[in-house]
Length: 487
Image (tube, rainbow, N blue to C red; front, side, top):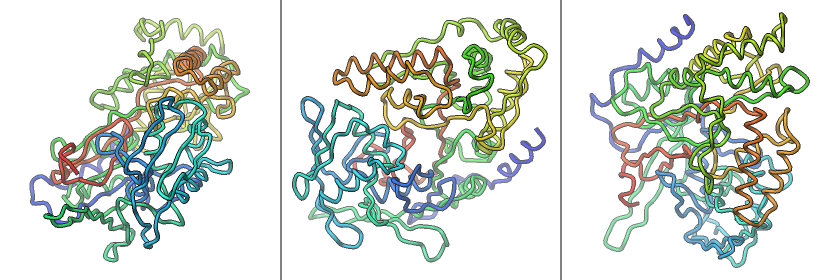
């Protein structure tokens, strides 16, 4: 606790709230927590948060998200979906690459096919297994053909993982250039075409990456208008700082936040051990410790609000308060382990929020006579934390994390249900199969769910066009215009 207090004191020395002094005019200053943003290629692997923010703003996909997480036109100015849901046709806007060369449908089709191709390490590649082909129909028309209907295709296409990038160049809406005055900072510009009787306007954003302490202090000092990319691990830096009222904002993020076993051949091979550990987790204490408004405990893989699925039913054991479950769970631990109880090692990200999470997990399992330690890396851990935001509202993304080609401990029958769901052309049958697969994952505790992912931002008074959304993706367009008022 002394170490945690010392870390938090760094944030507490942040200067007085920026709302107490005049903000500078001109370009909007945005910091993303992490390394300096760069033009990464999604084909080469998962994107860091700063790289994803840069890509989604200078290398938009066929479609993109607005501030509220709604689908709007990106490189495509309009699109149509066939009645059977197997064909998506996009008309590309007349546009050029930053070097002045024309963007063609053939180029776009080739880039997308490469991003989901056999050699790609794109994080969304597996999610797009229903794509049969991507073809250029004319110089400005692209068709995506599917093997089975996928209502969430547009949400996937709007993700930065499917950005249209060619040789380090993007398709907008912003153009990025190095800011010569500040090393590592990028100046993003976006010219907004006007009607005949109006002048063309220009949006400017200064984008950089920084460690969380520096980002929070810069915002509190009034030097930064917007901070993006916060997670549960670094949240205490923000809550400990002196910030303007209402500036700390949370996304209603959808996704996974919980523990997954990462090695077979030990005590965790036994589903009864996994169930015992899952039932002993004090989820309410974790949620209270994180202190995020509206955050609730979760004991199921799936969450409410997924497409075409009823809200998941909580396991029967949740009806018994944790205090009343502990005695039976402790007795079960004695039967399983006797006097040689194992130590469970958990790999977590660095940060004071992760320290707090580990403390609650350790207390939860200590009630059973078990010891918890922090693992230095995933290779030496028994559990790792999954903290991921879902790219769509489909249950398929949730269950596919736990297939036998992805998870160390798995269930072959669950894999069969997932495969059948991917292959069926009947939507209702697909939803039913996914729900059955999720129920098996819950029953065998292949995943120990805790709550939803936590994503936070710091929003200054100049920022009017910001809104939390389930994807935790934030466009840098229209930041000084109220969301929904045009643009």
